[in-house]
Image (cartoon, rainbow, N blue to C red; front, side, top):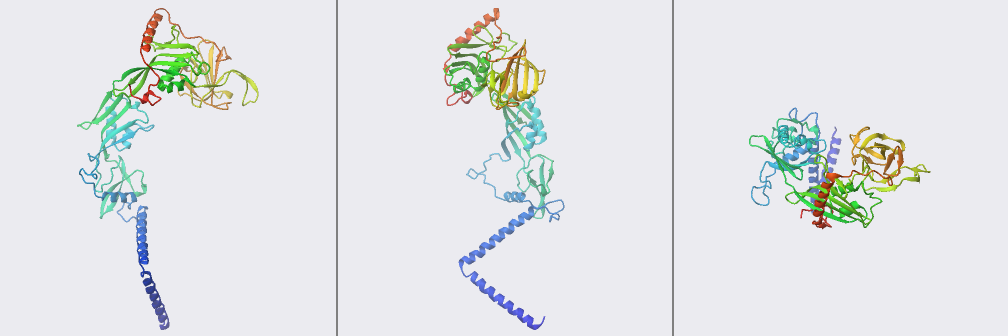
Length: 529
């Protein structure tokens, strides 16, 4: 490079330095300018720190750590930061540790569908050894297979410390990774949901939590507690609550439907269902029941010692007054080895050969006879009764019998044909599905749910098509005269009359409760009075 070129470069350099000094002086001449420089510098520093952490979270083919170990993931970095924070003072001030038993924690867990008790405990960090020991102790007085999804458990467990980092306890079979802190290797846990690219590995040596106790209530009348013994095993304590029996007499006037009116009177749902089942053979709830008719029921209900409702008992007596005509029903158990039945005042069984309505809460949408078919577009004979009910409504067998056919039947859709005693049969069409465990040739009892309503086949909406067939010919289910149940005679009739008088005296001396539960439509929401 010659002298002229060097001089030219020197002049440009001097000019650039002079310009830079002038602009720098102008830049720092005001307070706002100086603050802008400081702010820009801080922003650049933060950006560099974020970039550094991002790089640290990325997998590396050539890590700057010992072989077999990974760079520092962000989640682990935050755990180390939290571990370095000062602990709360152990005094009675507001900043004191809220846990009076350090290392002992409690939580509530729920059994998921398809899970087992042992599997659930292992999922929350209890060792397989402890989980199996709990199930073994529980099995001595309770069948763990009886547990259902949704059952909640209160558990108390001891939490062991992990290492010098102070990281949170890890569950059983936790994943770990090794990082370098102050040039020393430190094992840190990694949650299962965190990035596997961190180089985590399985740690099966020992579970972090030791179960101290487990408590749950499989029913409102039973409490079960499993506790750890001093020898390291477990023992189960099963407490059964002595329920107290209360008898209620409730009733009211029908406004709309029997079901809704009974619910508004405070009668529990289960009792309403049982009461409707009692009258299903005597009453057509669509044609016989009208606004202004009355009903009454005398039933048992069981409560816990604290007065909380636990379960309903039997109905001893019920009566419906339809159009001024009283239809009473009494509970009577003629044979101690057979279930109790209901009889009217004369001793005739409430059960007829066939139920008049095989679905609850049904509305007749189409009767028996000639009609215009909504799909075919012409008038033809409708040889059954349609009950408008939502899809999935349980369909009950109108009488005891054998499943003659179960499957698809063209316009009927999913179809069931039941053969009953004698020359009677009933048919059910447009079903959405069949009850599990039933097949063609199986026997069903009267009132048993064997299918669910729908709109399969030629149907414009969800409903049940119901037929009664005599000698293979469809007849009108609403007008056919069916054989009634058995009549009590002789010694059994005399015993029934004595039982009926006993029930009549109990009902007469009980107060009619127009509203069983205060501010509620269900007795189960109120305490026993």
